[in-house]
Length: 312
Image 1 (tube, rainbow, N blue to C red):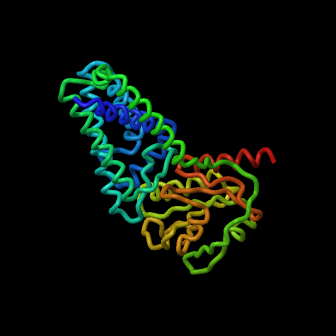
Image 2: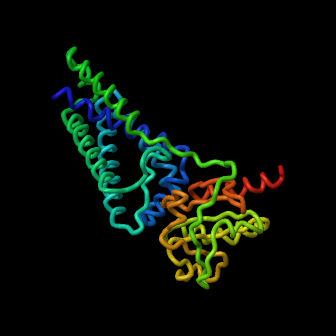
Image 3: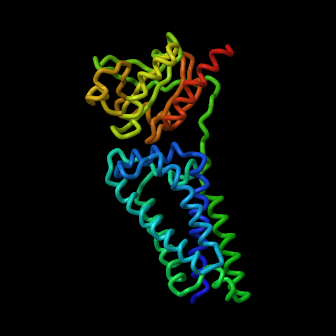
């Protein structure tokens, strides 16, 4: 069996291991992703968020194991995962608006595109290669054990090349956090009476938390359910929902106050809001904290304002 096939399970082990480790500290992002993808109800968002990272990590460990039987289990698991991820991406490409994937937690480019599909097809091809090794009764280590000196040089240089590409192409993640006051975008917001204002005028009377959404999907409906509780728990704050479509057209939002339309998604784009609900804390002088993404992070923003109020 060609020694080059050893790169297939090795690459899969690295990708799945990193993917699982990146998801562990960000279960809310994975749960929100499952909701936004509108997957079957059998795939509960919280259950998937808890289980998927450990399945990926376990698969990576099995691919690196020295025993052919455990390697074969890992290769089969890797193939099923890659085929499932490819099917999910193909499904997401047909959704409007198109959600992000959060495949690597807070790491990487989350946008779903034809490039994402191509990436997953390549991973599935690697999984097929790893499966061929298992069908032949071997494992990663049986292939490595047959290496010649030249093969070891090829492996070392392949690993160095891969590491260099990761360092060159990786995007640095922006960690949302409390910040100093900065200028507010002037994008207009429209209410159900078609009156307009901006974030600056919205924050004149008291601090405000603005929650931006861009779809009628699971995370948005969860925000709608939590809005009354957020407002009751934080009476010193204005809490607003801003949608890229007229929100009063949705029956489940018809009776809620402080709903705004963001025409052309101008505010959404100005604040670099993604597919997850995105929150900012502001007053008339500017942004005080955020943007933060995800429902749990928005609740953290509400709590941050409360602690900030106690110290000022």
